[in-house]
Length: 154
Image 1: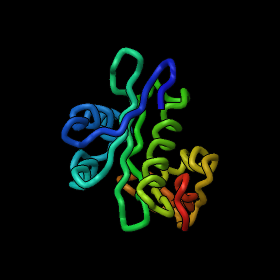
Image 2: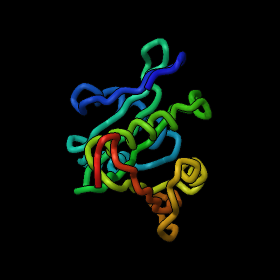
Image 3: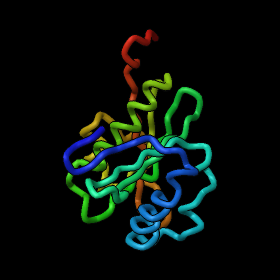
């Protein structure tokens, strides 16, 4: 996906790691106080990652998808503060959902920070779990049934 101010692309962990680390450490570790050892959970090498870039080529947002059979676990969605409320998060989410769909996954789930629940609900996610604490931040599990990819039959 590309707009006048940004582009979103699928990146391999090895190529995207420096930019992904910059964004996630800025948002989660510095802004939200997540301990560094919790942020880096060892799953990144087995995930698909998307990165958003501004029109100057600077990384501004990221998210990841971990495939669990036919389920997509989305997570580590982060957008730098100065780029929030500009459609970056939505572009990242839709890129991840599109990837899950084209890879034949039938559902997606995520642990949403409570203030972000409305954002995910607008894209069709439904709250399916009780509130829980993750790194001192309240979260709720949310799920979404994915439609088949174009031309795919289920």
